[in-house]
Length: 102
View 1 (cartoon, rainbow, N blue to C red):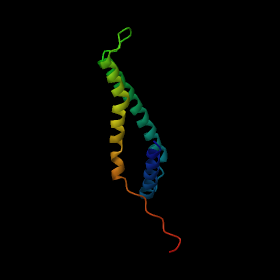
View 2 (view 1 turned 180 degrees about the horizontal axis):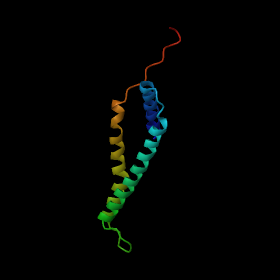
View 3 (view 1 turned 135 degrees about the vertical axis):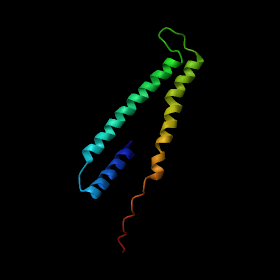
View 4 (view 1 turned 60 degrees about the horizontal axis):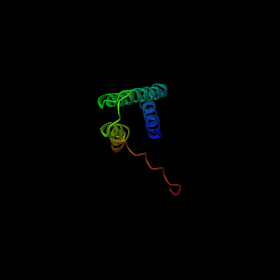
C-alpha cells in the first residue's frame, strides 16, 4: 500500500527530528521484511485451508470445497484489510499549511 510507505516516511522524519539520526534505511527495510513475512503467512494460511477442505489431486470438487476456497480468497482478505485500517484512526493528521494571506 502506498499509505504504508507514506507513514514510514513520516516516522523517518520524526525519528530524525527527535534523535538527529537518519534511520530511513532501517525503517524501509523493516517495511520490506514485514511485507515478505505477510506474504509467507498468507500463502501458508491459504495452503492450510485448501488442505483442511480436503482438496487433493484427483478428488472430485464439491460445493463445500468451492465455498471454502471462495471464502479464503475473498472474505478473509477483505476482513484482514478492514483490520489493517485500524491504525489509521490513531494516525495524527498533518498540520495545515499557513495560508498566503497571513
